[in-house]
Image 1 (cartoon, rainbow, N blue to C red):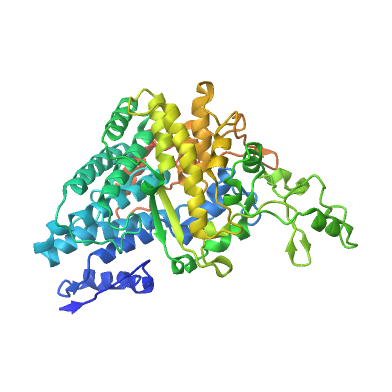
Image 2 (image 1 turned 90 degrees about the vertical axis):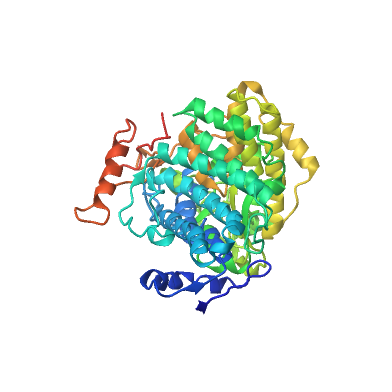
Length: 554
């Protein structure tokens, strides 16, 4: 019997070895007589590694959602096409979902086939992999609607006869996923005599009590997606989760994957600094409320009075390049293409080798810890404690009774967001790091617009959710689709209208689709999938990215 053993210590320093598993899988599938003995825990890292990678982040976040959600304005790429399906958007997302399933479904089959006597001892590993797969599935379904799930990955789970898997609708997926998460939480809470995989567990280092909470947090995420289509079912799920006794209670419970420094060198994580700068809408909010997260999200610019005076006095500085003296150290630029030619904030300028563009650069190490020879790691937020608090606050407003009021959940969410981002910024070793103090948190929360106001409570929840999801912006995009927040008429944060050659742009809501070519793989199921989605009244044209998936109800 061949043996391939992988050992990872600390922060999984030997990640290069793990990437060879794909090659091993090819031989496993082609030659049933070849038996490999691999520590099943290794497969968990492969799932974690595709929960979000540099390719997905580049196409979906840097090029699209950071701009669609008006956190940033683009300075490179897709100038007139940005508010369309551009940049290969969501292609890597779908591949990552497929790859997560490949390993998640293989784990229980592999154990049953190669070490049946230990099947019960690996129950926790199986359930943790399931939670990750469902979390990725929600993201993929937000963009693609119906997905293959139950029938998927047949060659990896022993069902090799299922070569043409059926797609399941979002309604079906949410029912299945909610039930599987509930079962996973129960199994994790009651399992005994388990094989530890703490060195492979990048979220909780083997603490299964926190994985129980994470499963319930993802259930609350599903409930929020269901709120418009099935409000009573959504509230029932929320009520069950919030009364379960197994829910997040501090930022230490946040469902975040932490990677080492080497991982941040794999791919174009650095590109956020080449592509994006702070938007006028986001910076206006951050300045208006003196939000301490401003310095954690963005780097201060170089527009000191001395630098501005020296630049403006240069003989080579043209009238169009002169920096207006009212511009300070924190500036945002227009997202709207039609304003770019006259937007003094976005003009590229240099004083020798000093970048004098007023728009603030993102804190690049939030994405790439290795940037500028940094020594920090990377992180992927899935459900933070603040995120959970804001979801709970909204459900409480919807009448779901639990142990806290909507105001208590909201205030806890705001505080925990500032604490979490301060902790993350320290972990990432951002430039000019300054911890957020409790005094700053108290002062921030006491301001009009931030302090709880029952007359505008939902907008406050939505505003702080939007800020919280600066990096996990699939969730701010999902919230926008569900609530139409932010908008050009919202008050706490106000978006600018986006125009390209005088034409008002919209935020894309889903992937474009085309009918498959007759005779292509899984043809009948692909056609049925699209025909079923088209039955929804708001789905729109098949080839329009502005149509709506099932849960995205008007």
